[in-house]
Image 1: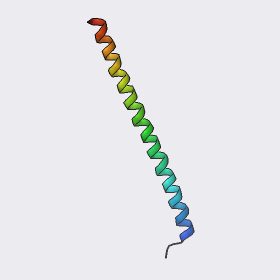
Image 2: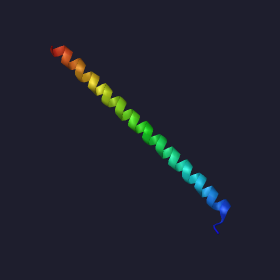
Image 3: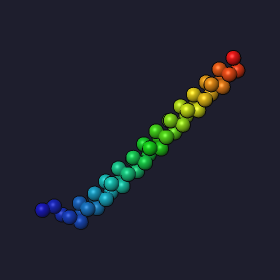
Image 4: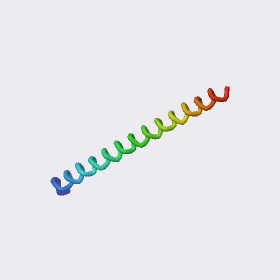
Length: 51
């Protein structure tokens, strides 16, 4: 059998790492989508200047 307490600690650490990574990737994708939306709005502003 595996040494349970140690593996449990490792599992908790693993889940903490996975959780922080998924949170970071969420934040990154959120920033990217916000910046792309802002870029899209800026394009519209530029178009309204020319029209």
